[in-house]
Structure formats: structure tokens, C-alpha cells
Image (cartoon, rainbow over the protein chains, first blue to last red):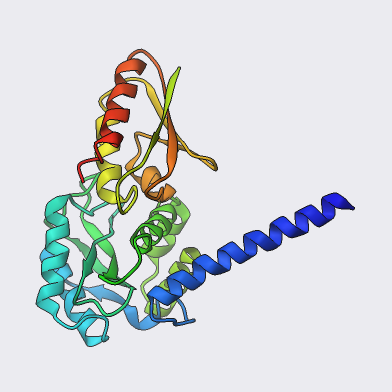
Length: 183
Length: 87
């Protein structure tokens, strides 16, 4: 009987902590209760040339979506981060990220190129086909960036998830697959 | 096997850049390197595994090195973390 009560209390405590962490992440995203990656943040079938083309595309889309105010400032933030060390990963994935005053709220954008872009250093030297871009406002808490990066990286370590993302070419399906893993 | 505890002082925790630096530094040693936290053991030579672990600033971790050059590896790991992993 006592064991049951202890387990119930522990489970309740864990659930509270998870809810608190989730609330923290949602608060960073302006208090929205919707999915982390809405369908409108996913862009497939792109025919971009190199890394900077992809980062510029993401910067411009971020402004169109109201996620950032200045595309050039966001582009410079992405480039500054790349200069510190590539965000190219493996198997065609990259996790570009920017923390900048021009970013309005925490957001994730996905860009998928048809063949892969050149000029992006990766661990396995494969071109980047899918960029999972993390946008973090200057005002976000210190752990927002870390939490998002941790979730994305953990997902990317799963070969089945990578295969799912690589094979899906419609924004709705891709958003659903990513949201299922990132929450 | 040798081990030592050390606290992470990077303001943003073990994100991509410091994780990559730690992994590439440890990659030069022959021994196994484990970063042990209260709830997980992470391969210290894998940048992805370190990033996925999402270890925040202020966390005390235990570095465990096991192999031929374990003492050198442990010294390098502890010095690197204490110096802030380049940040």
C-alpha cells in the first residue's frame, strides 16, 4: 500500500516537472499551446545551391512568418554561428541556430532541399538536404537553446526517424513526424 | 579505470560547440571516455550523444576513462571542462 502511494506521488511529481518544463518552453514561444513545428514552418522540394542560399531562404521565411524582423540580421546571426563551428551533422542533416535580438519568439523552421546543398561542412562529408533551424530570441531563458538542441539531436540519433524525415516530402507529414519526436 | 567529478561552468551548458570540442579532444585518446550524470552515461567521444544529453550549466558530472592512456585523457577532460570548454 505504501509502495503504491510512493509510486503515485513520484509519478505525480514527475508529471508536474514535465508540465513545468513544457510550460517553460511554450512560454519562450510566446505562450502558444500548438505544435512546436506548424506545417507552415516546413518547406520541402527546394532547389537551393549552397549553405548560404539555404540560410538566406530560412532568414527570409522567418521574416515572412513574423518570427524575425530583419532577414539580413538573422542571416548574419546564422553565419556568425557557422563561423564558430559548423552546425552540419550527418546523414544529410544540419541544425543551424541563431540567438538574436531580431528574433521575436522561439521557433523551429525546416528546409528540405531536393538534392542537398554544397558548402556545408558535415561530420560525414555528405551534403545537407535537411536543415532544422532553431531560432532563439535574446530574451529566451538560458536553457531554451540547450533543451531544443538536445531534443533535436536525440531525434537525429535515431536512424528510423532520420529515414522517416528523408523519405517524407509533404509539409504536413514532415511536421507531424517531427512534432511527434520533439514533444 | 580512473574517474573524477567536475562541474560544468559553461553558461549555456553543453551545447553544440562545447560538446563538439570535448568530443574531438577525447577522440585523440585510445581509452573509453564516459560522461556520467545522475541519470545517464554518455559516450564522451560522440558529439551527438553529448548534445542529446543536454547537460546544463552547474551540473556536476563524473568523467570516467578506461584504457591505456586513461590518466592523460582524464587530465585533459577535467582541464578542458574547468576552463569552460573554450567559452
